[in-house]
Image 1 (tube, helix red, strand yellow):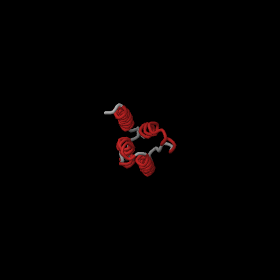
Image 2: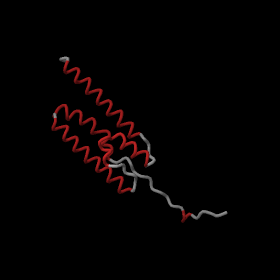
Image 3: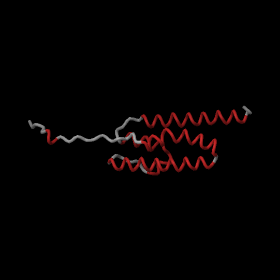
Image 4: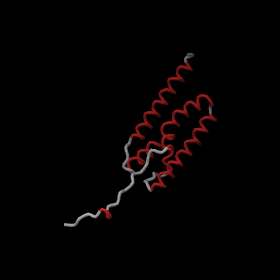
Length: 122
């Protein structure tokens, strides 16, 4: 029977997957994109699209610098798959994925209700 030496045991540092870029991409951008589009029109939507790309690239570079799994860049155009792969393949909680879905769905519902109210004259 062999014994384990303390010097032979290597501890793997867990990945820090909760960076500011992913928070911006998941939480802040869907909400601010709604208001920017509503109040600023097309310019606001373009600004939010650019901010989303910046946050996406920052998140990918942060994951790469940690040696974590980085989903393919084309998943930017279908963000739920990017988030699912990002969390699942790095053995992390899927909470960011669910938060994104709830916020995005809520934003669409609010947008629909506001547009209906505006069209009906309220």
